Image (tube, rainbow, N blue to C red; front, side, top):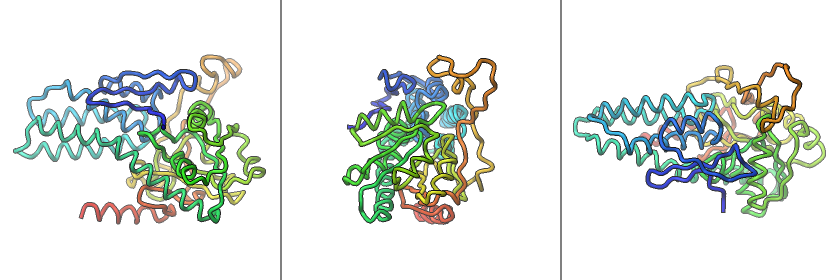
Length: 359
């Protein structure tokens, strides 16, 4: 049984407080969009898919207690709340994509003279509630496509995988993106070993990914971020698989800080480097990675751990939360729920898929 980081049932939303893991498992009640914004900003919930799901479900909870006199008033209310939620953590595109989708949908429906306030609210709330199941289904497809390609390269032999940050049940609705690929390998008895980085400075790998791997009894080892080069030199790593907070039109990928250097090391050691990217994390509106807004985090995340100082007092800190991996370093490919693509194929292939859906 996988971890349940998001609990939702008929308007009740609870999230597992990831700041307390791995030592305590406590859930936080989220009662409105302000609560949703706060748990996202504080990183009590994190992971690009989970951010969008929790943000939208926090709006569903608030909508249940909100009265509007017209469909226009309701549409404007929903739009303003979605815009507010996007500001919590701007680098991850999933919340922005969800806001764009639901804003366009609610404004279009509200313009229909035959639409009632009650029906409009029901349609939007139901669509948002379905994000949980859709995310799990998409993640499972990502996992299978990634596992297929990795095992093709290994001639069906069991593999050793390196991953970075946290991309599992704690970062999604319950299956995982990069960790979903690893989960799919394990389900096929094809996972020899998985290595996870500590992911400094916030330690999502040491605190969260390691917690998930132990919980699910996977053969796993934690390594320091600075050990990646020697790991690839000595431990016969079959592939590096990471997640994505935003993949742009040319395939450049924003992900947790430290991803870029892993891609460079993987290229040097001829290790395939994969990005697991459900299309909710794809942003075709940005041409390349130079235009991705990178969130900078508080200096104390670097200078202390759980409130205990670990750096010299008075030292300045630079703490970008993400970096951008150039498309040419993504040598394995970008894994979506529609298949695995080379970075340069992504825009055309996804454009064709989206076009056929609209048709």
